[in-house]
Length: 243
Ligand SMILES: Nc1ncnc2c1ncn2[C@@H]1O[C@H](COP(=O)(O)OP(=O)(O)OP(=O)(O)O)[C@@H](O)[C@H]1O
Ligand SMILES: [Mg+2]
Image (cartoon, rainbow, N blue to C red; front, side, top):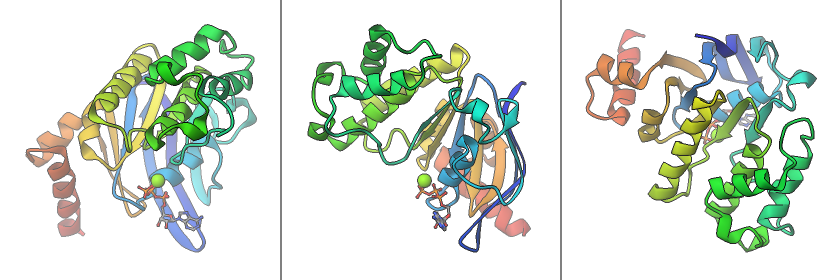
């Protein structure tokens, strides 16, 4: 496997708390990797490291061959934050076009690209509506469209499906799979274990530590649990017994 991201003993301390503790992981290129674990386990912090927004205390994070945060990575990595960041006084189309214009070297400036990205998140009918007149779930989808339009090689999505209905959720996952099939590397966080089934690889975190890096099939095989939720709990309990 080719790695898009390599984490080596990655450690992050925030306000005196160790929020990532000696994480070793390989994130495969051209696949969807799920970053899973309970609230506060360090998912957002790890994503911030990957996009270069978080200072590393120890160890290394190598992204597309360069140290995380390198200037060369800026146009190659897309990031959708946990709280949607869109301009309320711009329409859906204007928001996406604005982000497209930030990446003139990607093939993102064409109007069709903007329309494609808007359609991909199911907002075609709302393209001319101001973002401040959208629902929360719609606004978070504008945020995703803003990242899609730049065709990044690596796309980091922090809980992109929160607040979406099952149909939209399924459509987004299909879109992510199609992107991975065409070579994009995706890292998607969730605290809903069901979503793990859509990922090729899983990174399971708990309290800043890596519990395991494995495939969804390995997770269910190893624990014999009927659902991915139960499998996660079974793994945590196994580790607690071993400790
Ligand atoms: N600015 C900060 N300063 C100090 N500690 C922080 C800061 N932001 C987050 N933390 C702590 O770091 C830990 C990891 O937080 P993080 O946001 O990465 O978790 P998360 O897995 O994304 O959680 P959630 O699922 O709720 O989004 C938590 O214990 C949190 O309290
Ligand atoms: Mg988070």
